Length: 202
Image 1 (cartoon, helix red, strand yellow):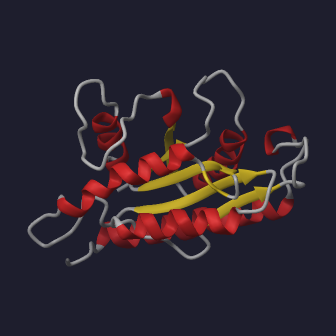
Image 2: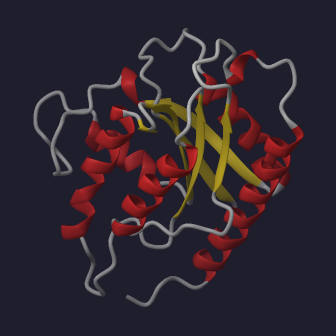
C-alpha cells in the first residue's frame, strides 16, 4: 500500500502566515520523501491548535488533541519538526510528547501501543547548539511511546550561534542537508514498508 507521511511543525509561531524555518526544513524532506514514493499529506502547525496540557488522549472541552491524534495515527511516517530553544526542543514539541504518553495505557490485546509499526523522523533547525540533544530528547521519548526510529533519522541545520541568518533565509539548501534528507527519507520509507508488511508481534 502507498505510504503517507505527516509533518508536525512545533515552531512557537502560531500564525500560519508567519514564515518558519521548520517549514523550510520540512519542505526539503517532503521532496526527498516524494523521491521514495511517500506522500506528505500535510504539515500541521501545532501552536495554531489548542492542544491542552495533560497526559490523556482527551483533556475535555476545546481540546484539539483528539483530532490531531487521529490524524497522526492515520499516517505511516511522522516528521517531527521544530526549532531549538535554549539548547533543547521547543515547549510545543514537549506538549505533543506529553500527550502521546497516553499511548502507554492504550495497548491492544498483544500489548502494542497505537504507534506500533509507525516510523518517526526529526527535522530540527536553530541558531544555537543543541541539534543532537534535541534529537536525543525526541527519539527517546518517541521510542518510549511506541514509535520506531530508523537509521539516520534526523535532518538538521544549525546556524551561527546568536546569528541573524535563519534556515529559511538561506539562498540555497546546503548540500549536506539535502544529502542527509535523502538518507532520512529512504531509510524511513524502507522501514515503514517492512513494518507495513510484517507488523510487530507484540
